[in-house]
Image (cartoon, rainbow, N blue to C red):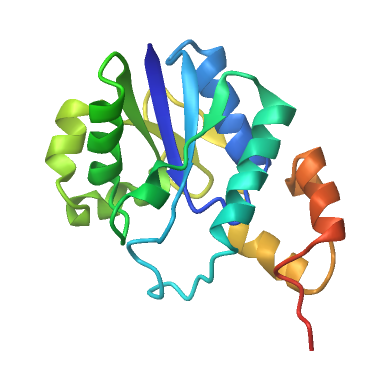
Length: 187
């Protein structure tokens, strides 16, 4: 089976994440999409990004799967690997655990300039046929489409003020955040 490994902070996941997963399936690039929430980010602390608890981000990704397509799954493999998490380690662990599948890494056009800094990028490119998806504000790769410019950082800022930006969130997550918002400013 052809599996797209769609990793990310998913802090929180939003409609653009859902659109990317759907596009991968609709265009028959893959048979399934496995969302892999990062357990501990390799660049944690560098960008001032504070992650919501891992279990919460996993739960949110499962909500996206339920709302969007049964061919989307959520893998918790990164919680079982040494930290910090690197894409090559996750991909090799998946390949070892599921040798019957062909894995492809999904990355956004926004990270393309940083790929030379990634651990073992040439091995990833050779063994895991990356699918680069368009992202607003960056050149769109040939064979892809530009997805809306939706930023988890901007969503977190709105959530911090106690507001729910429903137009950027899929239904079940918007509802869940109304009841439990880990980003709300609790001054």
